[in-house]
Length: 297
Image 1 (cartoon, rainbow, N blue to C red):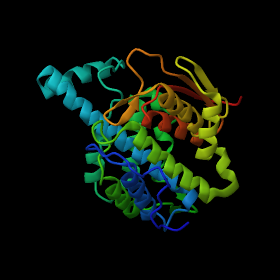
Image 2 (image 1 turned 30 degrees about the vertical axis):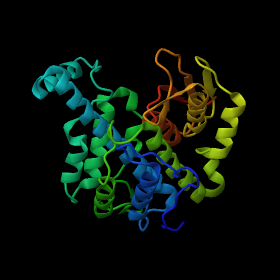
Image 3 (image 1 turned 90 degrees about the vertical axis):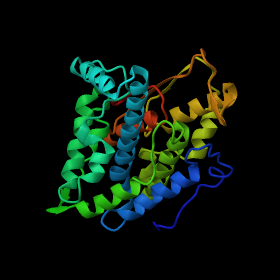
Image 4 (image 1 turned 120 degrees about the vertical axis):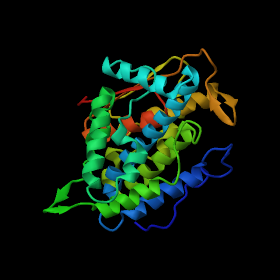
């Protein structure tokens, strides 16, 4: 698989920037990240390293945005952090979506340096999972310090280069629309699927097939959608996007459901732990509430 810059036809055309990153910029950026580790890692394995780091960066940037919002709300950053710490101690965190420990902040990762970075990243994602039980078995599936035949699969030097590429763009609430980031995320899934050939069907349904199925199902407000073999969650997400097409209203150049209407209730099940983790990440990246569980139907 060549490391030329790939762009999906139609998806980036006429993208609205509106002060945010557009789909073409994100796709180019993520493919650049894949090219950084192309030497030591086979293409099908790119996703095991890049997707969790993109997910962690999104969580970290959103957490920083939420701290700023709370600081404005309470008039003091120290008070906001104090209230958040009190919530954390009770294991009932409501002020933010996900609590990100200090060592898992993206700046802490970037400033760590090269030596021992693989273990530092592995510890960081595991600490995030401990602090946020809903992310257990999702973000902590990655082992950035893994070895094969006595050798590191990806060295700290390559990881440091990957972190630097991923640091080019901020992924906070005001930097990128959830659906735009989600589409870029699925772009990488699609590219990895193409590199894996026949086995790709285990985790990715071609986008055109997913769109067709969503159109045939024609989901309506308040309906439940269940995919018993959901893979990386693409069909569930396409049903949500179909609902936006048919019932959404334009707001700042993007379709959103009107206030007070019932969204789809999304449910999924997946037997493969790594693919289940991708599905959960994919739903959260799209800012969707989806009940996705691991299991054999």
